[in-house]
Image: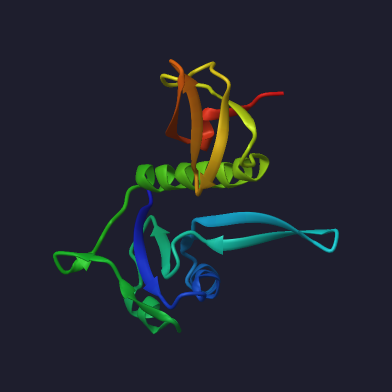
Length: 165
């Protein structure tokens, strides 16, 4: 079983620190990343950014060489509980990885939806109704529902929507 800890570091130095710690100290590292795909002048690019800027997860089955980590350039410290480094279990890291995956899927889904699209909620009180997508904000969508002779707006997550052909 791996015990994970959270390092604090300078923003935009997470990859450098992760590489130095994994290569130099032989420890496991993990950074949740946001993946965005962009097309510039017809060329597709994949942009990867930390979802949690300024933090790197470090794990080891044995002891952690804290003095060596502290000496690593751009490391500011680590999160502590009662004066000792906070420990995170493998199960919690697994849950963070799942949330990272869900976030990246939602970002991809957001690009397939546009305001004005006809969509259908898959779950909830408006399930199987055809509604109008009014706006998008992050992983949330505002839909326009026509019922009982009036129009109402409701918020719903993008993962609950499907496009109507």
